[in-house]
Length: 523
Image (cartoon, rainbow, N blue to C red; front, top):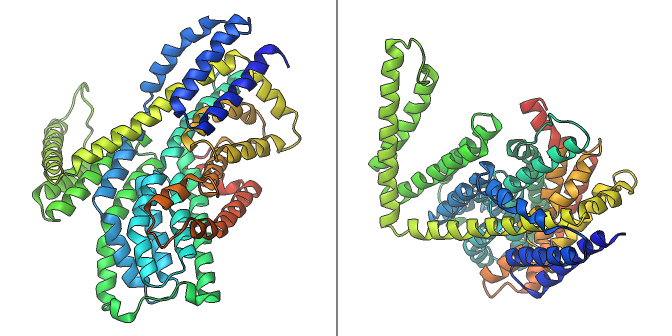
């Protein structure tokens, strides 16, 4: 091992040590990388002129259209959280499934799936579920371990359930690594892997996890009925009213999720465009919650959206054509009128949300989370640049290439799992994926979508694994005093076993991740 490679290894060790001590991630990545760049320059291991590429890389990050989806998806999730839609869903499902043993746990899982798909952020989903569901489950006699494990595992689905923020970032990094791997092999017209491909690949594994969770909860209800008793009949009115209440509570958020994911998977919109639709829809849903379903901004915006969709199918909206017909010219004015109506409805909905005191905290939370993600990304960009300048990528590629069979993928998975104890998923994506993914994607048996979904599910497992899983810390902070840390750690163990089994199944049957993208896009 030569001097530059030794410095690259020491740089990684220094970063892990400082993160364990508790230093801020973004500043640690940038500060350590800059320090080792100067040290490498003094020792003749690298040239500082390499850092001249940093401004262009940062500019590329800030102008990346895919990453623009991040603040929009975060806004959508935080806005839905503030609208208290989750409480309506849980109440409705609790009434419907409550008379069954384990019915409340099943309700929590189903609500958690919808929240995971709507929020896409683990911390927000965990806190929301814990505050809403844990007191209810304890009040009805649920075992604290089952209650805590159900909430922690269900909330962590936000790591892999599209449109998870992790999948957006992972898709962007994997696409860069995939193209770099092809260019290194002499393919100067490289294929790409999009965020939409990764979303499609994650759908079946995510739903598989949900089914496995539900099977476990049903098994507990059969084998240990005292751990999950039914809700007393007097707490449940007539079934007809329960079903109608559930349908009313489900309709709006489920429609929003279907529109966002459907537009991406159907190729009708890019992830960024779909994120904008989701953010706008969340704003309307919150205004509906505040002003009621018949509020004129909701009616106006809904009519304008439906009208715009119908108009788009009937009229060619392109300007500058040689000889547009009279109907086309009239259609342009109709389209502009629909857009004006949509803008008025959106403005009125924004005013309603602002008057209710919801908009400002939502924007504040969105800004904080977005700033955190992009600051880490900029620090990771500097780290990646210096690591490559010290020839660390060559070292990783040689080490992985020497491993037999799928040993390289297994080694990368184990490393990511262990790093999940000390690093956030965003940090692992920005630091580890650019290092190992190009080497892995050069292997003919490694499909980029399969690798991305494996990484996402692996990160999800490390997020909930005791003793350092971040989800467990989120839950500990939001759980009532009756639930102890031991309850959380013991309760999550069965779900971790399920998670590892699902990861092994995905390893054995890659088609679980590749079938849907192939069916949708033929790639």
